[in-house]
View 1: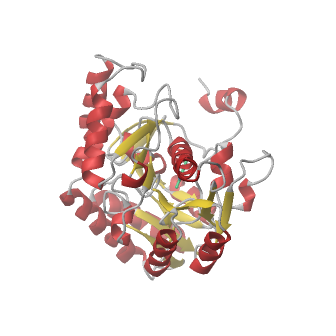
View 2: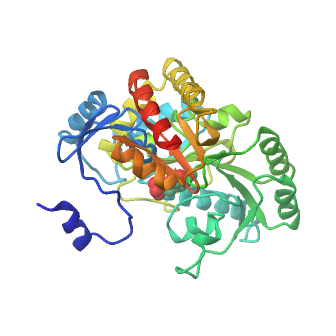
Length: 388
Ligand SMILES: Cc1ncc(COP(=O)(O)O)c(C=O)c1O
């Protein structure tokens, strides 16, 4: 079967796919249809936290699939409750709404923030959400509006109103928008992932947190990409010294099955009531059974190892020929290269290393369990490709 030709014929043309068909994998190694081995520094865009065909995750998923694969949210089921309890215990958040993706987690965050303001003011006068320029929050019409990049604000209008975009460097812009009134929340990615692995500075975040507190705005942190151990803590906000009111997450949470979560803190714990939100598949037992094995294993030993391997990457690439700069935290790394990032990614793939790009950067989001040997082998190749 010519998979590539059939894909071109039958799959909507929304993806510019690389010229490879992957068929199976183990840990941080993935194999194409010819049996060729690649080292995976992309993890399905930060999804496969414990790598490919992770036996612990696969066993939990298979066991749950053969017991109860789905039940409507009209009834109680065990895996989503266990997962929500664990997430709340690990974060200090109070309640969880489960969806199936990052965009849906953010949709819930937007609804929760607006409903909180509606309950407080009795109308929709405080429905505006401040998000940051260069952010990315998803592909639904509302999360495209939330996304602070002009390139996403065309072709599909009319877009959802009620989002304003502030500088991610100058907190004065956040303050000016907050002072105009009508806002209910500020929404941030602490490291702008799709925007090019651009971390916010601690000083900027500190200022935004105090602006939000002064103006009674909720703090929403989009941890879709940064969450679930990716940056070396369970959630990245832990490294920025504050507790958000709402955290959205997805990607690594499900370990490879679709799962998103919106974690609701104390201020919005009682905001959403019966009928205010819902999802047919949200909190699906199989996805949640797999996710439990992900969160349970993200202990301090593993997180310290993520931080160590992040440093290993930085040490290997800092000052290397063709590398201009490195950004990121833990195993979320952006590399600004002299060559166009796309060319580096294509050349690396040819040499058996899977990497991602984000804007003008090469982006690495390897599985958290990648071994030092695999990482060293991949970095040696990557260095050669970047320096050629
Ligand atoms: C920060 C952030 N938010 C939201 C999303 C959207 O997630 P999904 O593609 O699962 O809807 C992404 C995806 O890359 C993301 O990086």
